Length: 110
Length: 112
Image: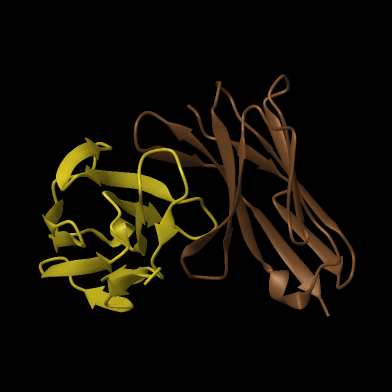
């Protein structure tokens, strides 16, 4: 299976702290994506990092990719209550598929 | 318009009912997807349409029947569902495979 495993499964932090979540995957990829899902809603694409990139930034988000370890991390800096959501990594497989990781549920306490 | 819309938002149906879920996008995307998501689980791919043709069916039971009437619309016809089919059904679209997907808000389905 291509599906990624994420850890931690759940993370609770105070507002203003940084949150780090990790994703591991099993086979070679050409990119890895991170999505956010607010409770019971659709997913929102956050960032895509290509296999030849090691680090990418977008606002308060920092993503790293280590293809030798088949792992990625998502760092959210200076967290806000509005960052409370589930975060999924996703890896493409085949022509049109994305396989989603197991997800990390982040709670940011005001 | 960068939005994927889904109707209805909520649906409650009995096991003998026939209903349909609808999805629409006007971003010119050529790939459209149906996912099923159970609580606290990741989305699971059900179907992929590419250029209005079904390209992937992830061994989904025949009580789920997808339809792509045109490049902007995607339907999921439901018939004789089971209570375990209760879930959030998500539609998504993208320009192509393996890249950013745009998701609708989902339909929360309850089968009684």
